[in-house]
Every structure is written in C-alpha cells, then in structure tokens.
Length: 99
Image (cartoon, rainbow, N blue to C red):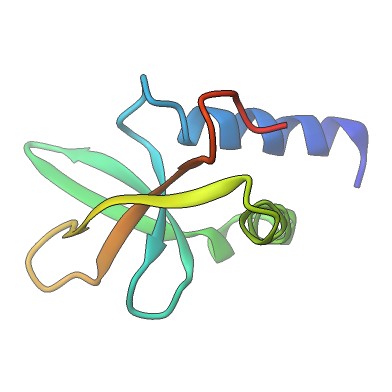
C-alpha cells in the first residue's frame, strides 16, 4: 500500500467515525458482521453502501482496526429504512482519533 493510499484511507476513516459528522458514518451490520458506509440520501432518507464497494484496502484496514480494538460498535441497533438490515455505528475506542 502506498503512503498516499494509506493516508487517504485513514483520513476517510477518521471522517466517517468522527463524533461531529453524522453522514456519512461507518456502520457494522448486525445481520452478517459486514461493514457499511451509511449516509443521508436526502428528503429524510438514509441508505448504505457496503465497504466491499470500495477498494479492498478499506475492508482490510477496517478489519484490522476492529480486531485490534481501535474501532468499537456503539449505540442502539437501528435500520436505515423499513426492511433494511440492522446496524450499529463504529467509532474509535477512545476519544482520541484512529492512529
């Protein structure tokens, strides 16, 4: 992985897990444990896109951070729209940002 690609991934993960940012946000599916990027779709609607739609480096890095305990699942389970899977938000394990 090049330094630029790594920096871009880490910048995006910091943004997606920031407490100040509500959309987009990093989510974990309670149905199958997969990672998703949830986002506001306008007019009161939300949707998500599986992390697998991004570069495979994203899934690898998110899995690594999750296994190492640097990302934790938080909050109550929710669905993005009627009939969608159930999700919980992923956030850094502490107040400090992801390393």
